[in-house]
Image (cartoon, rainbow, N blue to C red):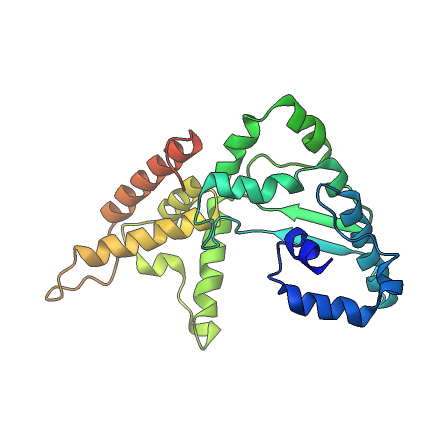
Length: 242
C-alpha cells in the first residue's frame, strides 16, 4: 500500500519505508474506511478533500480558498508553456472547480491563454469555462501601476514620509502623464516592472561615471516603452514567450 500511495501522491516526496511505518501506526481498522488514491480513480481524491474539510470544520473553518499563481517560475517548469499546461490542465475540470466549500482562483500566464483557445470540444465539455467566471485577460491602468510602484518605493524606505515617487526619477521634461502612458501600455505589474528595470538599465548603461545624470531623460523612457510595447504585442500574438 505504501508503494502505491507514494506513486499516486506525487506532490509530496514520500519515502516508501517511512510512509509504511505511518500507515502501520494508524492501523488497518482506521485506513480501511478511507478512500485512498488509486490509479485512475479520481473519486477517491474528492472524498479525501471532503475529509479535509470535515477536519477543518472541527477547528471552526467553513471552507478554504486555493490560490494558484506563478506557475511559470518553478525551476522544473522555467516558463515552458507545455509544462505549465501539464500542471494546470488537470485542475480545469468542472467537477474539481465546483467542489462545495472550496474556492479555487487561478492566476495564469498569458501563454496558457493561447493553448486554451486551441483546445478540443471535449476539453471544453469537461472544463465548462463558461461556468468558471473566467476573465480572459487582466489589464491594469497606468495610474494603478504607478500607485503600485510608489507603494514598493515606500516599502524600501526606512521613513515612508521621505519616500520618493516614481516621477522623481525622471527629467523635468518627462511629465507625469508620460510615465502613466508608458506604464499603461504594459497593462500588468510584471510587465510594468520589466519596463522600469529596462529604463534604469538603459540609463545607467549609457551614462559615464565622469558625467553622471541623476534623472532619466524622455528619450530613454520613450525608446524603452516602444520596445517593451512591441514585445508585448508579439507575445499576445503568440510569436515569443513572456
